[in-house]
Length: 159
Length: 285
Image 1 (cartoon, helix red, strand yellow):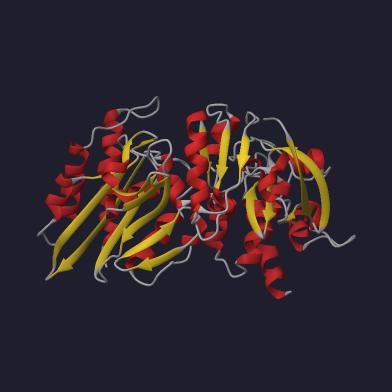
Image 2 (cartoon, chains in turn blue, cyan):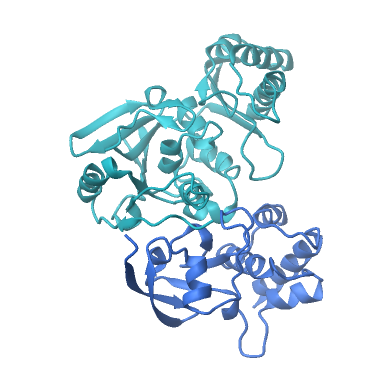
């Protein structure tokens, strides 16, 4: 029952050949087996959104998906946002708008916002607030996160 | 907070799904679709299935299409598929309005329509839609196929008439006439929380009066259902604020409210009264 299966996770364009039990969540596999610790784990039952990553372009809770289910799919995490030393517009606007304090929830918010804006670049401000209600932040009170994502949305539409 | 060990099976066809279910259901095997309810329950160790039959790689189960006079929704059609109307007409708009109330965006990328029905949470929006519109459910097993009306499917809190070897393969929602009016209202404390009460109403206006009213209430009783007493108030009458108040009263009088530590029966009835009236207010053209 606890047999491990060999799978390949493609994270930010790089293949990781790993061996995991069927019960291993994608979040744990990304951090423990693949060493990509930018993805944070908060509640482990799909409420907080800290572990949000993109799977095949869609934001998902990686604690509610098993690693074996993501084998062969394109996974993107916070480590894949910057281009070398140049931050992704979403990362920069979070910094400029004080969209984080302790930073624990930030990787989840970044992946959520980037994933939604890539799919729906013209999303309304109202719908964007609804999307951002998906994740929990205990520092900022959300206002600066909303400001940051709206600023990044404008930049992402222009580029 | 880690799920207990299980064996994962990955069937490629519906035949393989039902034969895996026939073999492993007696050993506490279950279907894994979107996993957005099952996996949290497993993380809490409230469920410890020893086998999971993962239907995410079965071809064609995400189909959403019109078949004759109903909308066919496949076993793995995800909530997110309904964000934009899946079909022209009232039903597509109704589903797109309701879906935004289900959990949060990333959950909607994984969770499934049929999974919600099989999970049968009393506050499930899709269970309310199915009950209000009169869904037919296609259930498959190695023993064959049967079609179950939603009122015979939803049996109580997280309880359905599915036998342990049966698989909910498809939900069928009747198409709505073009002149159908609908309104939906859900009350919860925070965006994405479970509904404490929700109402879905549909009706047609013929010569200024309401005909064929459907009033569905969810989150208030052990399962969503139509409330005939409220429908009787509406049928044959012209829409008006007083009529909507009366329909809300009738719904509140008719339900047998669930109670929990935060919600007394009296409060739940107040919510039923309010959500029914507000759904009706939203239904006006």
